[in-house]
Image 1 (cartoon, rainbow, N blue to C red):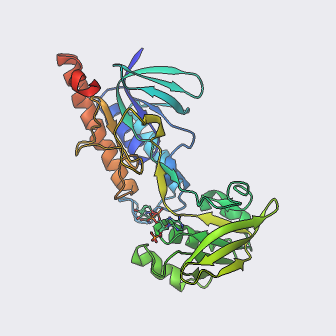
Image 2 (cartoon, rainbow, N blue to C red):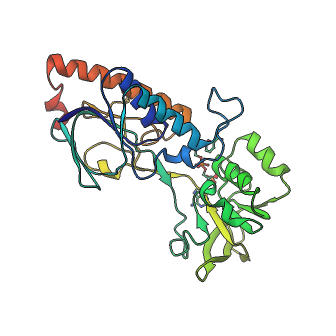
Image 3 (cartoon, rainbow, N blue to C red):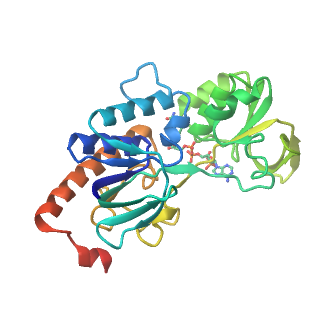
Length: 318
Ligand code: NAP
């Protein structure tokens, strides 16, 4: 069977594309990836998604979006796409569970994953004190002293969340000015459990089976120091999950897919929505908007396909 549309990814972009294509009677199939809901599902409290004046927990928002898409007939597969072939039409996909699919159109909503620091000790101690998800792991640090690396919205928002558990949260930032929005800066500065470590980078994570200290370097003086902590949460940005499309779709130097103003990639019938291509806004509501746009483009593409055949094949595959 050839699917009308397969949506890859289950964050706000993918779930919104599923809702819109389902309501257009396209019987969409969404392949969710290994982490259902993407980054927003790992967020404790979402305060800036319109319609929820008291905020909403990330996992709950994701669940509601799924329910809404399912209500109109969207189908969900819990699996991870491991290969795609965009050189033939219908496009073909293979998954980690060994399933094969064919699709007339695709929405790539694979999002982005946390960037790692790349310092000694990080890999070995991941899950043993090193974490990229405060919502998942914060609970383990009750009464403990921990560090958060980064100076953006995520570092501050998650650092604030972690003060519920930890006795002290050191926010380590490589500059002396934060990138985060003013409201979060204000809350962090007012929180007695938060301590800022300015102009510093983590050079090494110490621990034998569990984190017990970070070796820091002052970027102005080069001086090294040791910060005894039992946990470290890393929030230094993200890397788009687009490796699957390397060599088949255009992307920039950081791996963000190139799309036009209508979410179209260079291959007709292949659209991208959300943080797989958005390297500017990176907000749940923006990703949802891109998901809606991609879905509406899918509708147009499928209608044209039915009446005129596959468009621009020569151009696309030249
Ligand atoms: P971000 O805004 O890119 O911030 C990354 C932070 O990590 C920056 O402070 C950066 O330092 C630092 N950094 C980057 N590479 C580093 C390295 N190798 N070593 C040490 N520090 C490093 O990422 P984000 O905080 O994850 O936010 C991503 C997007 O999501 C943003 O658009 C943000 O507004 C949005 N977001 C919004 C909310 C909200 O609205 N409540 C919550 C979370 C995220 P520099 O500042 O020196 O570059």
